[in-house]
Image (cartoon, rainbow over all chains, first blue to last red; front, side, top):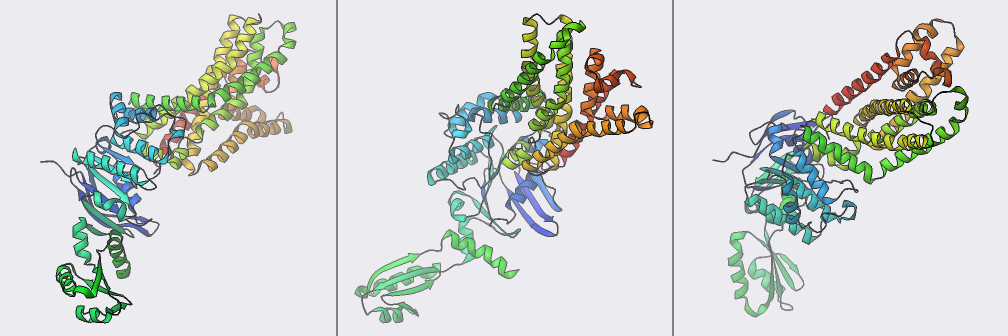
Length: 301
Length: 276
């Protein structure tokens, strides 16, 4: 049986009276891709720094690959990509990777293939100063992949990247997760990460408010599906009355419904025949779900 | 352990070469030392002392000012600069101890200094030997000067690390480094001299002043080098003190090494408390 990659139990951290991380618990299994979401200042980076052993926690326990955070045993098999890294501009891409390979005690022979894997083979002998933002981020990612770590922490790995670079990053993450590496990545937008993760953690003001798959979150949020029915001119009141809606807007009728009501409602609309010209169905978006979870807690607090 | 220290040292050396730091430091040392050698060698003929030795005496006064400055500029950015760039987070997430990190930096920066001193002063030595002004004895003095300059540099490199650990921003660290240089290298001597001039026969002159010199690495360096040259009668001034000291000039060398050791231990303690 493979052991849990990361266990965080009831971890609390305060900075001069302000609670940055409040009683957070979760765990990561081998090969799992987990997104840690939260607004700026929600405690994501603080949590990462505690997992890395840079910050001491006030309460709770953290176990990294069966070791204490920050111990040599833990650091040997984990890797970290900070939110913003500025490598020395005068170094070449290959030299940066070779340096980190030496620090991690990994053979230099790994450097070449790794550069190829992140698509920097051709730029390997150019100075970092000439790299685009996406290339720098991929270089940072390559650093986090040296020596096949068992746990990888990525702090906002896709922020500021164009869609294609972002896609490359996701592909790489999927690839290493396929090889059994657990990946914990943070972001401040659900839309950036959700489709490519196994599980989503939402941190709001230091408290963990959700820990579920995207489908699970969708169900728990119970947000209504919105239907917009376009009618023939003048038919809106009749259509609204038939469908039991009070929201009319000239030539269209708005209806909110639950997932299980959607199909009956659609067939009812179909039965209206020539009165209806078109139907639009809006499932709740990722941002709606994210807002739902982070705002419920704010109201409760 | 050694491979990680070497990895950091080599990276530091590479950066030093690429960003022209070494070139700049070497050029400054070469220009100043050549100027001193050419201007300062004029009166030496009548004294019958090796001209290279005279030059070494002038160069040790040059080292007192330039080496601490170069060392502090190399070192002030070592910790807080890496925090600002985010690379320290990355480096410390590797299985590497904080002391390995700092020893690697110190080794790399010492090498940068050694290269700058070796080439910069070497140009002057080569020039003098080629012009028929040098001898083997003078060359030994020269090597001693370079070796002790590196030791002096290490004192200030370690002080630079301490400043770098204590400040969160490299701008603040840079200001602190310049202030430290001013106090330890310039103002300290002025204050001592002032006190000495005010009361040349008092308790201060006989029993406090010599030890006050030992406490400051810049003064220890000057004391040891001038005493070793036996050149105090040539250079005069503060160097004349060497003969009236209540201890042997070797203590100055020991004191220099101890300062480097203490400053390095201090920076090792400070870096353990850093949360990158």
